[in-house]
Image (cartoon, rainbow, N blue to C red; front, side, top):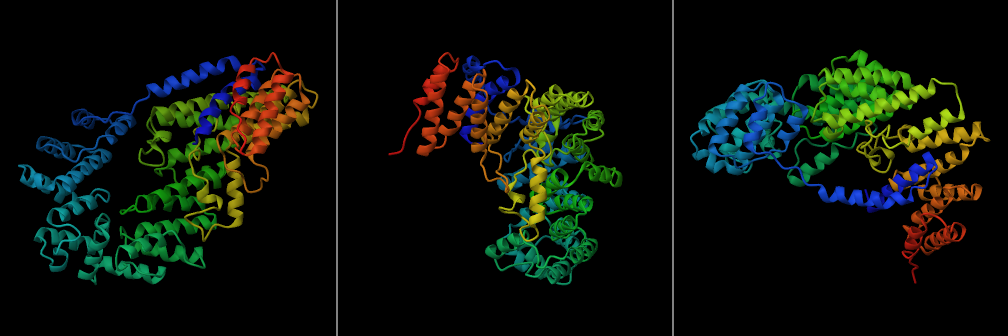
Length: 594
């Protein structure tokens, strides 16, 4: 976020209390500023843990989310001989797949950066035995890493052994098993290594899969060098034309069944998911996008996760999410889907149902029935105490909303509901798509540019708007003004509408395709209308100051002049304003271009 927002948030915190309480908050602005500065000065980077601390955590019978986050910050590529020995022993004794993956990654980094020293150590043979045992296992996540490590010990991707095939007998056996049976073990090997294997074993299951994939997809599986390899990777994000979902589904389902674990399966699963998505079968789309994210080579992990997030948050309804939970009760994403359904119920104004759903989710989450994966989506947003706190705050807000909705309709209740949508604890602040990047689906640029239609863009735009607190709040305040035009709350409602536009401007929400007026102008126009209609309001001076604050950020002479006029009006019409000094300081910042 730009520097504009940092300054904006200080002003927003004061303006908000004006709209909700009617008092002038200007005297608190300096305190807010000093508190923020103090908070920034006291912040410090999180220290990476030492190995002695990490190994104690790894030996625990139960590993918490916080433990996993701490372990993830440990990274060593120059472990001592004793540490390597301890890593191997902990790996052999641990049954936790996440711990094993972390330990193997540590060993892998040591192989990559410290191979010569490892070869001279007393426990090198112990390390090789571990790697060989992992490759012989059926662990589709760990075995490929171990095979890559064994290959690296004998020679890198440029080794002449890929031409004369002078590998050890033990390694050749493992490689032949990989190309003919355990295709997933090839996923960690590089482009040139897989190409060499295809040339060496032209009749292998691996090579047959490559040829069959090319036959359907077009192009080539292996290029002639790095440039072609990059081109092939880019081609993975562009779809065949015309894109016929039924044809894609029929062929690709057969391919992943016939060649399970093939290095091309991640792309096949992704394309299969996309075909289901285009058909509107979002349940199957989520299933196959998830499978793609877990495919052995994992080249489309980020893309698959983003599509899942988009579907669950912006394409599905609470009803469709409930159907997914019924059809896939034990799916690894059950916790996320359950939470997303509660979110949708809030957006659909089904506050009582959302309350029940959130309470059920929290109970199951705290009881360990929804072990949200620390490696899926944004772990800071979806796991650990931070997430739990957010959901509890959301539940508190939803209870208030449900209570309001269950009362007799009135101007006061409408005001209280609208107010909650811009309250300090954002109702939508932890929702599933909060950190999703709109340009990837909004029509500017997309991983699926060839299959995104105008209808799709319109639908996602509408659903995206439904999760923005400020637009919800504006809608409710406008409803109040329309239904209760004589209410004494109209003044605060109109100021609050302007304040919501101010948030949209300050937090740089996207300007939607149908909008012809920018958030900046919407905010300014609303504040100007408020001052015209309520010149004697205790909030009029604050509205003028806010107009100037917005306009002064625009460097054009017209905007600078508008800022100056707003401040002069404040000083002339409200000489006893508590923000007089702030206005006098701000007017000094006005600069006209020559």
